[in-house]
Image 1 (cartoon, rainbow, N blue to C red):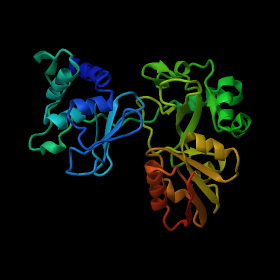
Image 2 (cartoon, helix red, strand yellow; image 1 turned 120 degrees about the vertical axis):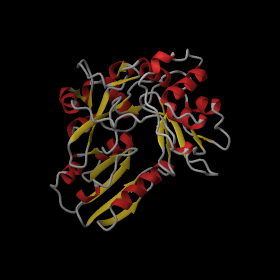
Image 3 (cartoon, rainbow, N blue to C red; image 1 turned 90 degrees about the vertical axis):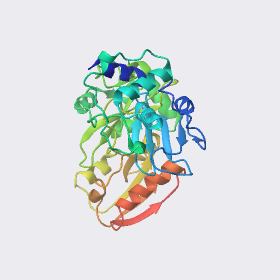
Image 4 (tube, one colour; image 1 turned 45 degrees about the vertical axis):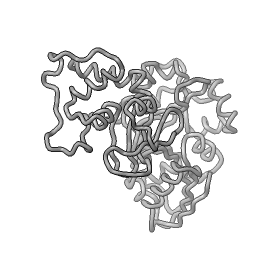
Length: 335
């Protein structure tokens, strides 16, 4: 990695650039904005003209700022946002602007040799810093899952589950989640440089692709803390993966006929319902359900969508219903 690249990594994790609202305030982007949960903010997109804010600026699972416009699908990170807001096109110039914002020493001329420059002629409103390669799923997720202990071996996990009226014994019996005890875990099983064992994210749930293959995991914090309650592996892809009980896995693997399918939102709802019914239960999160999952739902099935009654829940429900149109009866219940 070049010196400029290392500086960019440091900048993305700085206190200012990792705080979405403070960054937008410093860039003068808060006019007409609305607050989101935590320190997130919804601003007017800089790429397309709009009166109602639709661009979400939030802190991602890795602790850095992420940007996404829900109207035009523009995405980026803190440096991308700085580049678009200031009209800078060369990556070195974007880093230079970021250094000014956070009060960090600017890179010297020798540090920018070979640094990529955005193509000339690209309209300024669509300029962004070079995108990072698409991350992959962790290659050793199945190995980690195989090494984990039973949920009932962790008093903290059992206590947290019972506080949500979820039976740890049922979770163990159905193998819906396991726990990290003394096992060595991969480096990606961490949050902001600390392993999940330290941050308390020791309850681990498997997530599956559209063919029913275990491709990654989700970690759930079982002790009080300031970090996110639930998160995916750091630095790896998290989209295109769903939570699934045994009946749902049978569907994905082509071993089921028409049946009752229930789609819920998030890990708590998935464990709650999957421990109380024999229906096929899928749990979805942001970007989880895709058009690749839909063809596996047997024709003639009844699909009950039980996502939350909010903007995110409505979006998930719309995505699922759209991909399943014509495959069976679809009902929407509010969780």
